[in-house]
Length: 96
Image (cartoon, rainbow, N blue to C red):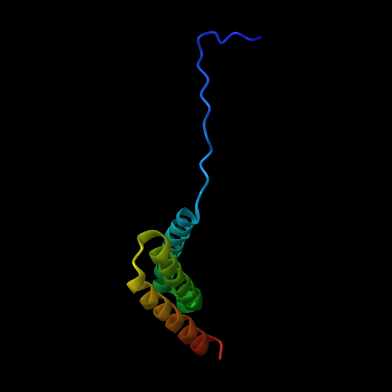
């Protein structure tokens, strides 16, 4: 048997991340990417399709976070419609 020598042992529970927190993390990362690609696109228009793709992904992520985290269902449809519009116009403009 080992003696404690005056040191206290503390058991720390590991925090499990829920889908809400992952959704918020994805939103933060995509927001940073939108800012970075927006600054890059001020210099050159070569990354414009990537910018629009990230913009549509962030709109879908915001719609997901509205339902799961913020409980604002009325903005969800607006984010989904805007995200679909950005994705479709990007495909039509740069692919076809």
